[in-house]
Image (tube, rainbow, N blue to C red; front, side, top):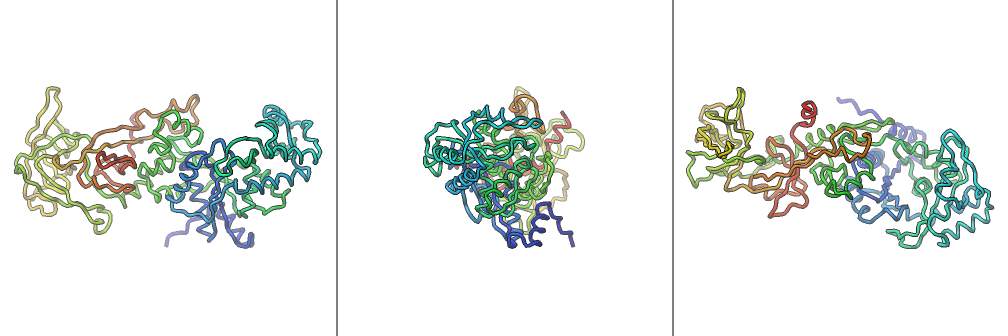
Length: 555
């Protein structure tokens, strides 16, 4: 019997809460993205954790959009986020928006004003920053901090009524200007923004700050375990202060390490730069760490969930090797991808003793890793074939078990052939290889008695389909581009995309969108979302082996 997997620290907290009877035995989590961009693999970790905890403890997860900044948010991002969560295999109990609570949040803020715990400040952003002091020096209170409750009530109402321009005033919590925690030095709760909101339109011209909206939204929804990343540890005392002063449901915040992945960046701001400056082909470019990019590249939801499970939940930041993500997709696709033949760097091979005009219809399994092979497909065979240029050598070294003068090899699913001669052009490039075949050596019916050590793939020339094949590699040259000095874009890998024209077996003309295919001996591929019947486009998901490590060692 295998050992049961040990609990992570958040699961231990939940187990203790359940034993103590907290929240009447409920577990209610939330995933609260801001709809100002597309989700990336780091968000996938949070999604898998929040929804996974709810599933494990028979609880619920809310999908709540933190839409408190109308300037950067858009319904396009809302829809993409919902698509990503569903693609990962999860469904939310409630679809909610921080904007649903704008009236309630305004009421909470006014309650703090009336308790003398919040005030309207006319200072500029620069003045407020200067008054906050430094981590080693306390902040200084300004004259607006001593405004009367009545004046603050009126001013806050006037802010809501739209009487002031952007930046003229803010509402601040009155906490402690000498606190060693900078976040507790009278943080801003509301700012003025005369901007159209994607859901509330022009109803509001004041919007709550994240630190005010977040904890109160958790409390309104009675979230039992609010999971954030480590950078929010200094925000937790303020989270608890607001809940305590408002005497609302005591949601609790817990922090875990965010996901940092090698050879990419996870900052939404930096990813937006890559998109806006044309370094990538949109948010779903297969080189991007976005969930939509991974999906377009051919990653499966199961492989992403497995990756998130393997990296676990930690309290310390670390850098996760992208090789682990690639391992997870290789493991999954090995079990699920259909095998097909594609020649990426073709040279023509002519079987001189195969009758002209004759064709064979051979059979190939879809997936030999699965019992029964998951069905199969017909593969046409003819006198003229394409093979990979690298499978022929004019002067082969010892232990080269592919084609060369006098050498024999098996054609996958077909016959054993022997190289008789070859043709070269004026530049010395091999343009055609001439072979003979052994009719008695047909795969599955071989009575030739000949044993060969090599097997190569091929595509029949008259039946081949032309396809654009995009060979994707890592977006950056160094492991941690975010840590590099200077402009992170200087570290972009110029060879992260190679586009080639290939020949594929005819069955791939009916390739299934979203399906993984192993191009024999070449890697795992999927049909691109923008592929068309008259222009097949395949994206490489991952190589069969980790070729990058070898390249790094060579370098």
